[in-house]
Image (cartoon, rainbow, N blue to C red; front, top):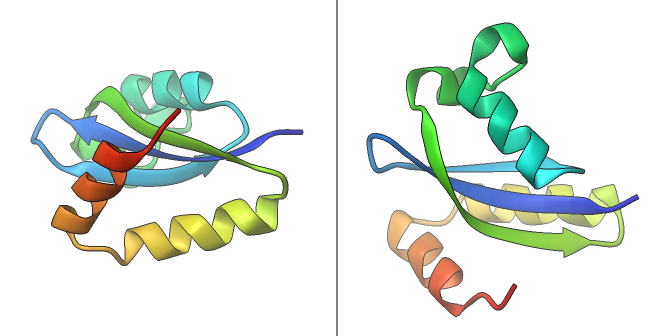
Length: 86
């Protein structure tokens, strides 16, 4: 199974970071909102674009990276996105 960390741009210009096994499917779930399992944050801040996704071998590795990214500043996240090769 593949494991991903992803970042989404929201309508309000914020960046949401999450973990999933299917980025495109999770993005659509976030867009549909709370009744379909979207995250609380993205229910109030509708995602409009996938900015970043990175694959990991294990769920544990992906979750560690998600935690690390969530503690970065917005500027640091933008640098990570800009420098990432998909």
